[in-house]
Image (cartoon, protein in one colour):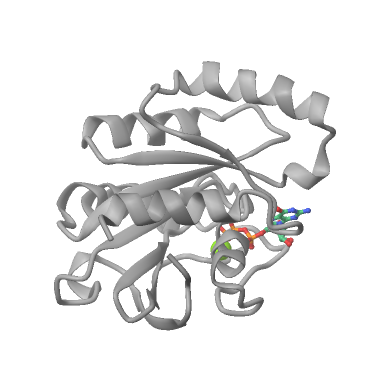
Length: 195
Ligand code: GTP
Ligand code: MG
């Protein structure tokens, strides 16, 4: 698949405000600052499409991007950022859980984890949700440009062990800087949406 067009479509704050219609969608999930918006921008080769920021917790709602006029990439709000207001944090869990559970257009989830860190409790919890809801999933290990090959190998083992990653869930090394892993992720998305 070649990504030819990408456009921001809308922001949703709950299931009701998600786009109508039957287009399939793939969600990007992970901690605040893990690189969700950067990964999305790299996939579509558009630097400023999804807003990236040094201020974690910037993306607080569900953002829908229409790709090739045929499917959506969905930038989910990041979890685990301490300085997000309590009311916002309290809404995150129920909103995202409901989305994962009830959104029939959702065909798969790409969970992002930072190559430099051991997965947090929330990363593990989130991965369990994916298993629980039986969603097709893959793990993208972000910011791989920041470590040496040796260090990356060590981290991969830590990440796989912490998540208890299932064999059927691919793990992709990714860098938004170099584009490493981009084609692999596009192939995974293509398979998930059955194009
Ligand atoms: P929230 O929207 O707050 O949940 O964050 P996010 O997951 O969308 O992260 P975002 O894409 O905004 O990236 C956060 C920071 O990490 C930014 O400063 C990015 O430039 C940086 N970053 C993201 N991906 C990479 C990467 O692959 N390599 C490097 N070196 N930096 C990255
Ligand atoms: Mg973001």
